[in-house]
Length: 395
Picture (tube, one colour):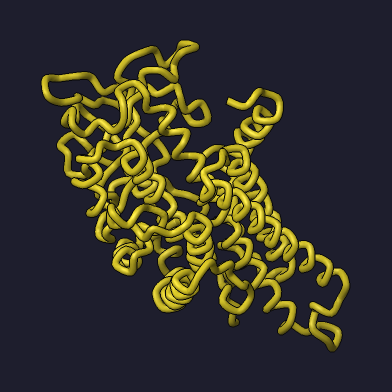
């Protein structure tokens, strides 16, 4: 069975010739490096570290960051379309680049000039892969209830605690860690006293637990990160001490757009599978796509994909223009991930019994879509963000 790729089904928004060339490169890499590997890697749970190196050397790990730091200097709307293309081929890779971009955000926006010049060129240069350490076993949606501590110990911080649900755990080269330097994790002011630290992976006392066994994205390592008296130099503090929670939320606003793009890519891939099947599969003497029951289903799927793409691009334009975009990012993440779940479920239905077996990609795409309704803020949290933006004064 052949699957119509995004290059056949989607006309990308190109701002200039550079963006057009970038999209072409992304499609070539997706076809050459991602699609041939995805099924085996997902079946066997193999983390595609070499794929990230290949994409990094091609400049795809650094797209939205300034060129002076070694980034690609691309608008966010261009970066997100690249993420969508990669996620359609292999969600583990598209989401992995989104996680890496999220991980670099605090340093790129709040690091000192010295920190930025020291670390960012290497982090954005293609060889390094990052992980974002905010969630904990007892604090998922209540992200401010951080219990991991970073206590001053001479010229260092002594970090102790456990982070949970960390993508790239044990595989990353550096961790952007949010830990409590003061305050009470239970009190009404628990958001205060959280600080951000840049933690190299080789730091003594930093280790990863055994990977979680997930229903989807099996090639993406997700595990707890353990910090056991890990000594992090005080000069590795990113931003002001005690002001890290606002930085974490700002990073998540940008990261939610990455999740929206990933969800749109997964939905597009499922639509491609369903359309290809409906055109080839014959019943009662004609293609099943000719029957109104399936034709209308495909039409709804295509409309949902197009709407998700338009919503994340609209939010990205606000970000590129320097306008507030937090509620719009929440809307995009909410709508796109819900659409991905619906579209992938419908794709399985279009294929019937064949959709339920792992010989066809529809089953994998459906399992992958579910996690996008959970990561970087559950969709219930997105509804809270959107609702508050409607009822509370700006600022």
